[in-house]
Image 1 (cartoon, one colour):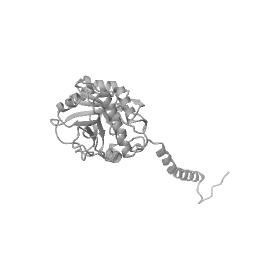
Image 2 (cartoon, helix red, strand yellow):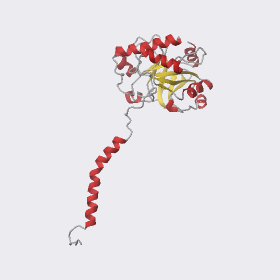
Image 3 (cartoon, one colour):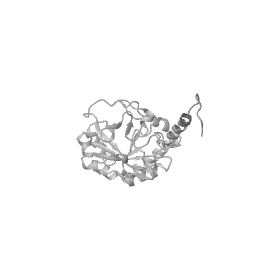
Length: 279
């Protein structure tokens, strides 16, 4: 059997020391493996999960909340499938008077909560509309406009339905501008807007951020005369608007508001919301 000599380490101490050294050596690789397996905030999301303002904070940051009262601006919300069944009565009681629901994305996705969200807002008295998340790298603008209208994005002259919205913004699935040049992007948007108007008789609202619009359309000004602007900016003011628009119609000002997160302000009292619905 082994004999312990005075002054030499005991075998158990040798074993423990060796084990400690081995663990320490493994720690960097364990940390690396854990980081690789952890969800990454910048990981590409699944198709269909995009929503209004998804890239606003990452690209434009966020600041304070807007000042002013609801006497001159009317509170609204925008919702998508990730919010599930929405507590519309709660929102109504808090002063929300209009809402937009995501209806579709590309030509491959429809919102499974669309009925509860779109009809639910109407049932509590809100003026409501639908929006389409554009993916210009998958199909043409006209094709996506048809898909949108066929899946909830139409318009009716009932005084309670807002014109459909084209949500055109940062691409959560890849290249910011969907692989298109500025002129090709303008053409895609024009094709969508023209087909939407041909199908519904209404000019669609354009939802975007100034930074995306500047980068991906070259700050094109040609849609401002016909299409209302819904600007995305999470700050105390709307800031600089895209070229052509001297004012905004709607403003998404936060993604962390009460009940549903995404809150908006209409640039006018409730009668102006009604006027847009009436066409």
